[in-house]
Image (spheres, one colour):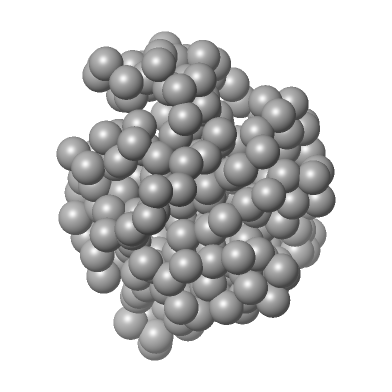
Length: 253
């Protein structure tokens, strides 16, 4: 299934809650530079669509912004509430804003789960003129020849699952789909880069939060993870990633 059509796979979209605590523990926080850039937009009211366990919302709240979250899974929402984030458990498409308007809408690793036929129009309705919508996605690419060995492990034990840590498509020249309509103009597209050094348990913890890995048959997943952990142990016990977050920022006309 293409990235743009993932919103159709509701079972996959709503599978994260079963691993809410692992998601919160193993998913990295978002880059401070990205959060600082969003805070500089000086939004008084922020809507976080698909807020998950509240990682982005908490970072923005720490910078003085008032954040309200929408999250379809009650288990993810509960973790966010423990962080002090106000959350309504619903999908963006069915959410009733009750006349509320926002200066900034953010969606962290979640906008691809929103129906594009409905998402853009609803975002336009809940944003004030001149408000911004920021969608961002993180990626983690493993460095070095370990990818070749991982490819063989996945081919044997999880042929239908994307290799965790595989190289990502370039974001250069990617067009913001919101700019195709009349309600938004593209403001910026940026990549924020960093790196991670993780031991075997930490890498397994991270990829276990990916929806295609999480939804594997438990026995097959256990075998896959054991093979990956063994490979990492054989290669010194750690892996290093080239990680980053890709931002698409648009302004409400």
